[in-house]
Image (cartoon, rainbow, N blue to C red; front, side, top):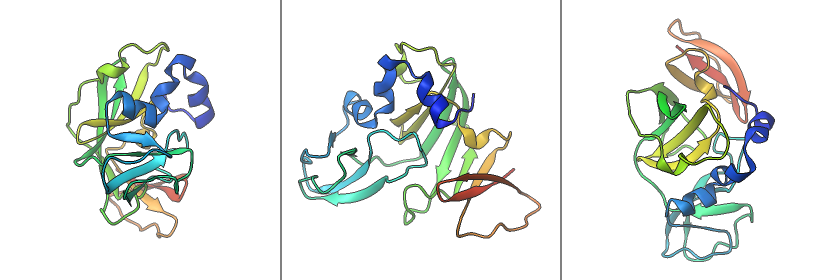
Length: 198
């Protein structure tokens, strides 16, 4: 099931809202993290992002160096340790893995700006932390970095609803190139025009 923001939000059981709060999810998973107003344990780079973001696409997420205090960030944000490794998005249907895609991004790009998503044969077990949800969700999408769960949605990955195996975002500052290997689909969201798919 592919859902818009309102539909997605309205389907969440009230006792499962913690899943969509990335700070609470990170804390339950015992990551080094905290809300704005708390101090980091040591000077280092941390990921800063909104606690809750149904707009998606990594809006406002960024990596910043923090010496100690976090008061300069927006109160709706939180900080978390940085994970290294592949960024994998997995769709589970009734807890069974159905789709696995790898995100590829130039390390110099903003965190929202992906170069490509492609299907891969990577298996990750359904996260145990989600085994006792109150609501009934046929599809659950989970995002992992280096096998660390960072985000959960009670929906499928919408970027692969075309039956495609590759999705290359086309950004607003890019021209759509004619390429017989790929088809352009208009799918505007944030700073994206659509995708080149195949």
